[in-house]
Length: 94
Image (cartoon, rainbow, N blue to C red):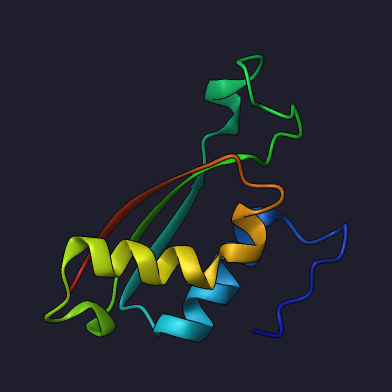
């Protein structure tokens, strides 16, 4: 994936770009929920650490929930190993 990780690009924009590029979703919503977790253990306090992804893609047709979550986690592996502390996934085929 060739998504720019500059300091001016929000994590929500990076997540959206990567998922759009890899999965061509029919619908995608990336929600920053970091404000709900401020101050708890493991929260880095960056304001960009907790996200919810609501996504629908034809790529999910015939796949189990586990397979879908694994695919999304693989696409976002760099972010999950770095700045993202938590990612909630609501995914389905259209």
